Image (cartoon, rainbow, N blue to C red; front, side, top):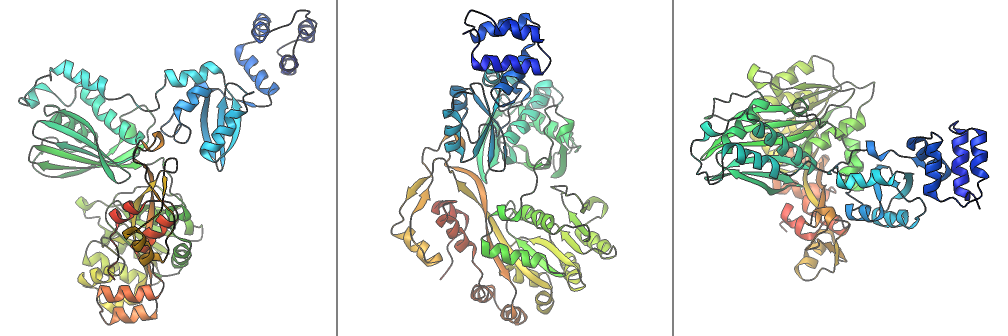
Length: 570
């Protein structure tokens, strides 16, 4: 048999594409000797068929779309669901996700077990694309999924400045902030933190070394230790990147790094930078604001169905005040942005006053605060009240003046959304009263208060089923009247969760919606504990109860729930 069925289809595809003439096709078809795949490739090359043309023809013959993996850039999420070891063993490459579909590049289109195994790993429908074997192999040998480690740049610093055995003296003379290794080190720290899913980078000076730590999923992890000599130069470099005064080391300073101005790697992030003088030098904390990251829809934030329905009803009211409370890093900003994204429409005018602007939202007018020139939340609110908005977002109510204008805005036909720093929803009333707002003004303007926290999700890949007993069972029964199988984090973890047992975070919410009984209690000046009881009678689930519901649903563990919020006092 001169040509196999598939070989003939490849040749016919090349003829359709105009790469082979009818005479050349006839010559190949009439060969007397059996032709192997390699021999056919050689013959086609002799007929001036390029490797790319042959690859496209093969993909068409196999009824697969061609994928040029050489141009594909491996990212931090490439092997998130399909482990790299599996991809190397089976010569496949996850390309991306489209809803419930995973696009998978394969080198062997005849191995149907690969998409089946990937489907079992991810729970996604797998659509195959054809890629060249060499291109896929190159992704494992040439291209790292993250930036290179710190060994090379730390080695360069040590080699250039002789840090081995240094005692930490003579800092400014030995290491300067404009040296190439220091510039590389600052960039590498930010790049590595970004790819690791870090929210905050901590650069901390200790007595004999400087420590770099990342906060990932709410937990700080030590990443790097450097000799103390490097500290001042690294801090100075970071100050230069955000245009701060490098000569001022006695006072705290705040700034912002636009990282795309300092890198060619296409990482479009801004960093909110804060420096502070500490006992062994200056410390720096950088909050990563990922501009490529889009806001999430409200259902993806962890709201229970009951809370989501109530919250959606509140954000669609024509006027009133909606407050979110919780500590720094509890997901308040994301919830606010998601709410605005849901109610944003061409017939609605939305104005925001933020410090800083974390996400840019299309169709919404956003204002960055500048306290140095007198542009504060209060002055922005005053200006907005003269600009005919329908909805106003204020980044935070920090003082009496802002609180007064916010309440005034809510009472004069505007929907006002803002945040406060309180521990739970009922104590927000006491906080506003402490600011000097009259109780009747609070009750007249308030629509709802949402207290929230972020808990780590238990890793779906390695979580372990567990039957609660004793105190665990008692906690579940007291909180939500339920006891059954729950999940624990695996003590060893897996590659997907970086051996921690947890991957990602989910929100828990305490949504206090005003009703007639609650309004009466606010007007009477009742204590927070009494207001909490009234709100619970009205259907409010406390943070502890909502966290236990997440445990019941298998989203997190009982240990993580109790570490995030304490049990309610009975």
